[in-house]
Amino acid sequence: MNKNLLFAVDTNTQEVIVSDSPKGSTKINFIERIGRNDSETLYNATLTLTSISKAPNFEVAIFKAMDKVCQMLYNQYKERM
Image 1: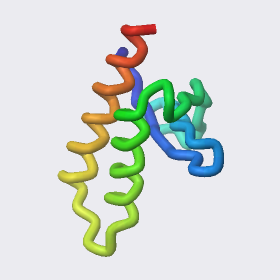
Image 2: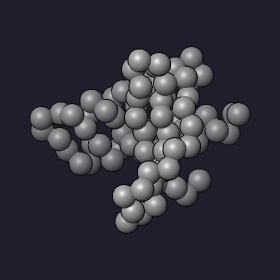
Image 3: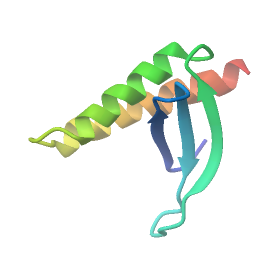
Image 4: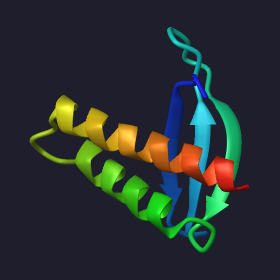
């Protein structure tokens, strides 16, 4: 997959929301929701990514590294499906 994927967590439903956004665009395209029970690892990684983005001392390099982890976990999840 060669998309710019975006990850968010819906803590009410305990789902990861996966979207994409074309480079240079402000449009966000919904892809799917993945339940915590379907991929616990992706859910926890997305929670971590979210907490990194809210950190008072936000560090881009750390955020990008964790985003890459989420991308890999999502791709692994899609391969299993």
